[in-house]
Image (tube, rainbow, N blue to C red):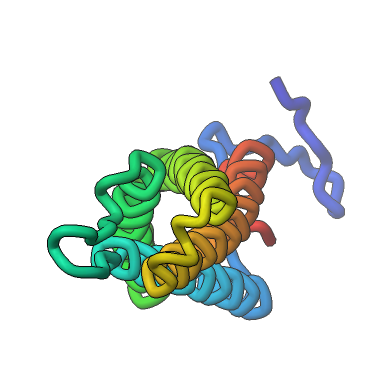
Length: 198
């Protein structure tokens, strides 16, 4: 319990029994920095969406040759993994782009703040590693096919496969940057009780 204090004129000043309500105040500089931070996350998420979508499209459209000797992406497990993982990451990134636009325009998260912070961080991690493992498997298969001479027979197939895998790596990198930023938000939430870092 607080002890009574003296006013300047010597009279006794007692503390109010009700606690003071402190409003959370964000300065203009803090709000502007958070907006810039949100825009940066939006840019990385949009880049991850574009890269992973392009990777999925290149792989899904990868079939060349006549019907008798055609080589198709779904003939290979690793290329199926690349196509499906890139498509899943594209869908997730599209959702996160929408969530980022919502947050920038409305100043609030789609889910409650605690759920949104952990949702972003955990899903960024899961989908980034899923895409990385898929494109790593695709790279290993592409190297094996090149060593066997399959790529020399179907040059267009090999080029399109390599482009898809490269775009998948780019999608992983952009999703990795998003994961770093969402991880920073988790740390801020743990330390400050808010996703705002200032």
